[in-house]
Length: 133
Image 1 (tube, rainbow, N blue to C red):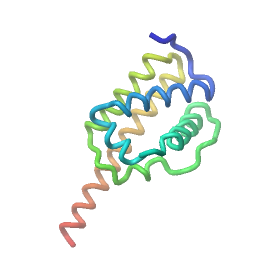
Image 2: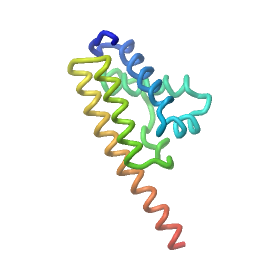
Image 3: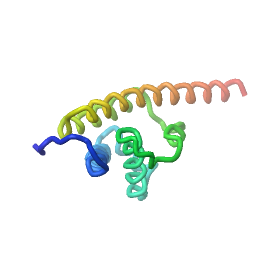
């Protein structure tokens, strides 16, 4: 088992993101969705995720953009978000400790809740518009 460390710099952010997405890319439930959307753009996606978590956890404002927009039309439901959180928490617990590790889990939990609500709303209203139209 790797030695746990605190999240203090971009180096640890990169390790977190790389280890997490390594799990996602092999996961029975998530891999197909991520690989279909990202295709061969994984290096660019990972770079964006480094900047996102660097901004969130280290308050080094390197991320620009709207995190939800790329997820709005994905065919995902509660079980996908649950698996995403499970893999993220597992990655944190296996590799990191300390306040930033706890904050990463808290923020991931809140982000997953918000994204799931928004995706559900988008999917429900899309079906509603289709049936009304």
